Image (cartoon, rainbow, N blue to C red; front, side, top):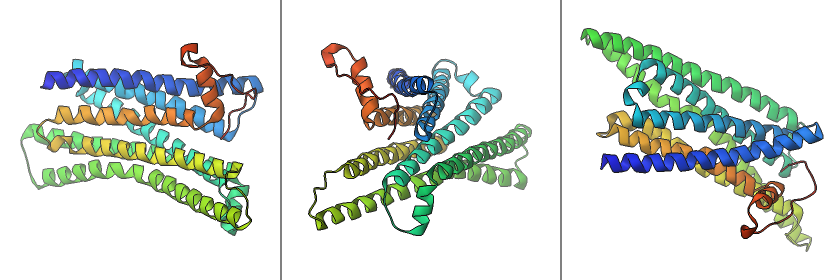
Length: 316
């Protein structure tokens, strides 16, 4: 049974790794070439490019970790390798989640319409607001990584105590502190989830107000603003769904030590983790008209060839 699980895990790992690199590589290449030709880049393109690059790094980290778990289990659990993988994984995953969250905030401030002074202030300074969120995201990513380093220090203390066999009250206190930090480490993903959820709710409220105004004036609700609202809402809902899967994977990792088959639990968690950077890249491609046209144009003619738009700039 375990051999079958390992074989299935390897197949899924390779498939998701290839698809994730293709999707994120496509995003990075298309927007990067547009940036190179026009000699300028929008905030949207900047976020997408960095998001694609960071997700490719995350995919490689997960792939290497899964490969080592299957073919070199002892190497994976050596102290040095564990620290390197966990620290880079934590920082990169936090950064990718926050970059996607900044994208949702950008959609909200660009598309939603409210007359509240605070929202108008944010909307008029959208670039500055998103840049400050990006800087805050970088600091939070560093903070989550530092908390993990502190967790490793406690782990090293526990290892030293465990080897001497001196399980005193000090050992129990350190064990409780380690377990608490390990569980609380998952809470670093809650702030971006809350920010994305608020952005989604504001877009839904804005769409409802817009459609009500259009009906009051006897106008069709199939205008460009309605389409932009719906497209942004679909992208944000999709992101929240894959982010929830991402959070579930971290819960599985945290609980794996208490399960009878920890290795199987970790394999399931890694497959779920890979779904996030893979699926969301294709959601972003399909949610952007120009990116979707470019992708269709690159496909073989058997699948249908459409000419992409003449504009080079890719924007929401």
